[in-house]
Picture 1 (cartoon, rainbow, N blue to C red):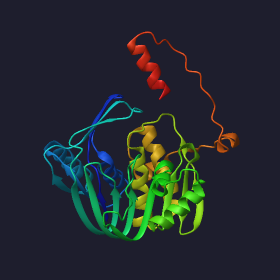
Picture 2 (tube, helix red, strand yellow):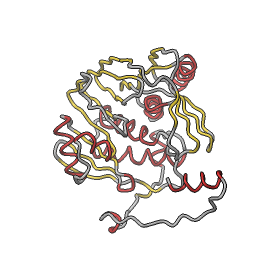
Picture 3 (cartoon, rainbow, N blue to C red):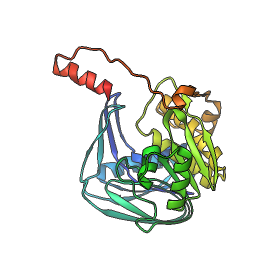
Length: 299
């Protein structure tokens, strides 16, 4: 059984159309349940969000422990690659306490989760000020951190280190056995008690970005904590499952993932050495609508 604690949020996207209740924790529960894992989910929800998530839990056969609040948070996207507007009470400081053998913890906007676990996987979910796992009193005998490179740099106050040095420094400072650093087209670096390896990202025909990071963490947590895979093998499977999610907008079963033909990305040597091509973006920018379109493409 994996206990998940984190944000359960409403998600609205104009194009392509998307109107669901997931959030990081809710999506992770679905990803693990669809793959055959046993899950229990904790999170703050309002009345409508609770109804939606309770229905999904009944359908997908995971346990749901709602913690009621008057108004839940909502993420509003204009398109699938846009930066969302977050609507709802952002100033509240709720606290959840979870004690379990295996815990997947996500950072939250509206609350903090205090965890006491034997095994824990933690994704801080913050582009500006990620909180360390133990800052709120959380404890775990075996800790894995799943970060992007920006979060890893913020943890130690230095973005100039190589990914290898960054992972090792984070592991020491955060007292983590495993550190995963996601690096976009370069895949992910895996630090596991001193050994370092890499897993590739995969080419897809399309990219549904909303929730892709949540999917990676969920599959890594299931493989590493529940199935006993090595950190490298768990991250490799998580990367392929994330490609499936980006490609199909859905969560794979074990059978579907086994049959999913994914081709690893192979970035060029000059890209690996830091080369970034310049792009000339041409288009009319005389009306407000045209100017918005060009600006959004530039972003």
